[in-house]
Amino acid sequence: MCIALATAAASCSLHNVPRTRLGSYATATVGTNFLDLSSLGEHQYFDGRGENNGIVYTCR
Image (tube, rainbow, N blue to C red; front, side, top):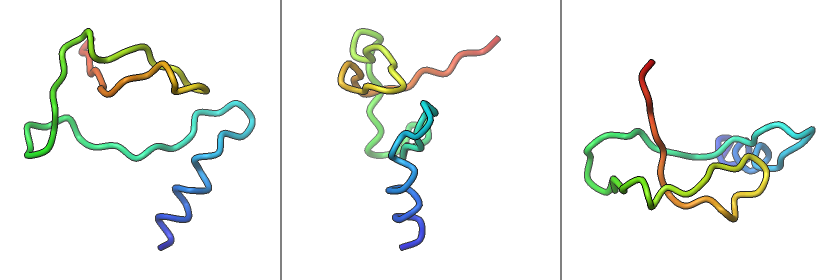
Protein backbone atom coordinates (compact mmCIF):
# COMPACT_ATOMS: atom_id res chain seq x y z
CA MET A 1 0.00 0.00 0.00
CA CYS A 2 2.88 2.38 0.75
CA ILE A 3 4.30 1.84 -2.74
CA ALA A 4 0.92 2.57 -4.32
CA LEU A 5 0.54 5.80 -2.32
CA ALA A 6 4.09 6.90 -3.11
CA THR A 7 3.55 6.23 -6.80
CA ALA A 8 0.22 8.09 -6.81
CA ALA A 9 1.74 11.05 -4.99
CA ALA A 10 4.75 11.14 -7.30
CA SER A 11 2.63 11.08 -10.46
CA CYS A 12 1.68 14.73 -9.96
CA SER A 13 4.38 16.81 -11.58
CA LEU A 14 5.33 19.66 -9.23
CA HIS A 15 7.85 22.39 -10.03
CA ASN A 16 8.29 21.18 -13.65
CA VAL A 17 10.18 18.04 -12.60
CA PRO A 18 9.66 14.73 -14.43
CA ARG A 19 7.23 12.54 -12.50
CA THR A 20 7.83 8.96 -11.38
CA ARG A 21 6.35 6.32 -13.66
CA LEU A 22 6.03 2.59 -13.37
CA GLY A 23 7.94 0.64 -15.98
CA SER A 24 9.59 -2.65 -16.77
CA TYR A 25 12.97 -3.96 -17.78
CA ALA A 26 13.78 -4.28 -21.47
CA THR A 27 14.20 -8.05 -21.50
CA ALA A 28 12.87 -10.87 -23.63
CA THR A 29 10.45 -12.05 -20.93
CA VAL A 30 6.89 -13.18 -21.52
CA GLY A 31 4.61 -10.20 -22.01
CA THR A 32 7.35 -7.82 -23.17
CA ASN A 33 6.65 -6.36 -26.59
CA PHE A 34 9.53 -5.12 -28.71
CA LEU A 35 8.39 -2.51 -31.19
CA ASP A 36 10.00 -1.05 -34.25
CA LEU A 37 11.24 2.55 -34.28
CA SER A 38 8.13 3.90 -36.01
CA SER A 39 6.01 2.74 -33.04
CA LEU A 40 7.97 4.60 -30.35
CA GLY A 41 6.69 8.15 -30.81
CA GLU A 42 8.33 11.24 -29.30
CA HIS A 43 9.14 11.51 -25.59
CA GLN A 44 7.56 14.40 -23.72
CA TYR A 45 8.11 15.16 -20.02
CA PHE A 46 5.01 17.20 -19.29
CA ASP A 47 2.43 16.11 -21.84
CA GLY A 48 2.39 12.41 -22.65
CA ARG A 49 -0.39 12.57 -25.22
CA GLY A 50 2.10 12.36 -28.11
CA GLU A 51 3.94 9.38 -26.65
CA ASN A 52 3.43 5.80 -27.72
CA ASN A 53 4.82 2.68 -26.07
CA GLY A 54 8.52 1.97 -25.97
CA ILE A 55 11.91 2.78 -24.58
CA VAL A 56 15.26 2.99 -26.31
CA TYR A 57 18.63 2.25 -24.72
CA THR A 58 21.81 3.41 -26.44
CA CYS A 59 25.52 2.89 -25.84
CA ARG A 60 28.18 5.56 -26.04
